[in-house]
Length: 437
Image (cartoon, rainbow, N blue to C red; front, side):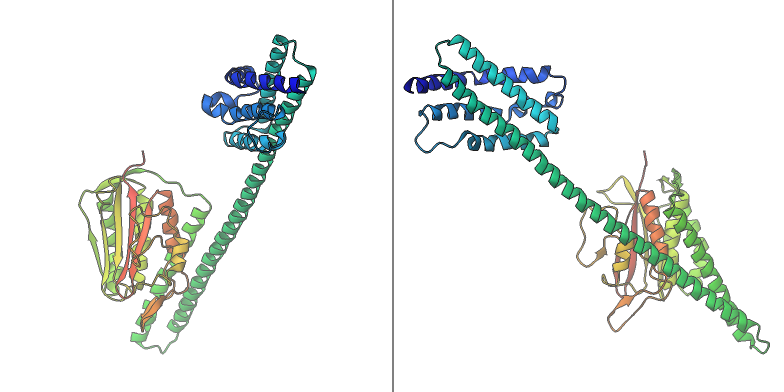
């Protein structure tokens, strides 16, 4: 028995001295194996990771079997190998190995250690069979634990990954359901507005057929009729535009864009409508301001926001301005539509936040209480009112116009934000790329 212990001590010393040689032989065996490709991309330190610890554990177990280990109750070989083996397996999965590669790699390590034991036995023919058998049993136990723990880590990570996929799928389904509900609500609101406008048109038409109608009343009914016919026209255009956008049939056409000319022509066309409501419509910005963009879509974005502002502003007016974004954002230009309308509280703007959810958070951060990072529902086919300090209420038909704005901004890689204050008005800022190259 004493001779076997002495032989195990000598073998432990030999294996400790040969650790680097074993690692080099193992590394060479991996490189020569055509089925082990992932390890080729790893630096030597990452390739070795916990393998030296496994070999050191083998040396300690040989010493423990010989009674030459440090004082204390030595752990069984399986328990001693679990920690480095599990750590090795976990590291390999993180490095992109698959199950076959990990088990094959550990098999190569087993071959290298067995080859070293055989070489030691050949060079020391006097070593007893019992000592060699004990060393092989210890290494076999360690090698088995290494493979077992690595496979266990693989399946644990696969289960974690699968659980993550399930959560992602559930989240995606919930988001899809939410988007479908929003889409259904948009169409419901559009239908509500269409019915409302058609009802007014029908009533005004019936009234105009009355033979004894006073001239002043007739003029008023004509104005009501014309106003609601125009409203129907705009609403039908919005519905058609939204349908095309949702169907993916809109494509952006990037070309040189004269922002100044486009905005001035747009404001000239809408100004008579604003003047009918005793509102001003100002157009401010540097002349000859050029950028790249889709002229039609930029115009549609501005038109929707201006018409929305005209619709709900009762006094004052609307200011349209453009120019450089700011010194910290030289790659974008800014379009601003500001009105003196009723404004809204953040609670009343909740539908806007959902429909115009911002593509990206403003890099400068939000001023508390001053900004809804992204807005997204038109302020209604009905009227936005404030009074008695109450939050603004949004009427029927909200969503169509600004949902179109949101989708067009997405197509043009533009960022949109809105600032609003009850009784003071609302300001939309849209920042477009100067170039799309």
